[in-house]
Length: 194
Figure 1 (tube, helix red, strand yellow):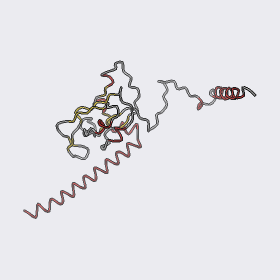
Figure 2 (tube, rainbow, N blue to C red):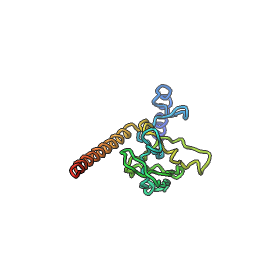
Figure 3 (cartoon, one colour):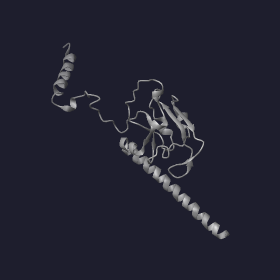
Figure 4 (spheres, one colour):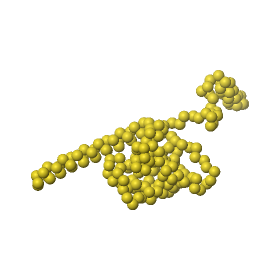
């Protein structure tokens, strides 16, 4: 019979329409911004720079190696390396970014910068409400805007943050053991010569 497909489609539509009054799972409209769907843990939007401790400048993990800047497809990351060094999370003196800017009007949220970073110093944020009234300077996120605490990272991506912290702790322990072995080896040589 002609039109059976249309009748079947109308039946599905009517069933969903009537069912939406009785079953909350069938409601698909979210009254944004009053209601918000929870974002999945692997959701990503724009990059941010996690830091350890209380000071965003001293605890920043970035050592200004510029790998993320080179690998960024739209070239939206701009880094200027510092002239002096500061101790990193293992106590080793490292360079740090004097300037770290990301142009979010160009960023395509591809996450390549996160994947190439050997220091776990750049991660993807879940903040997607970044609209601004101006087009130019307001869409350029500076280092102070990008720096967010490790606690914030734990709140948005608890599984990934725990893995990163475990990896950094293991690296710090290995560096401390290596330093202790080197110090122990240097001590007998010093006392034997004296």
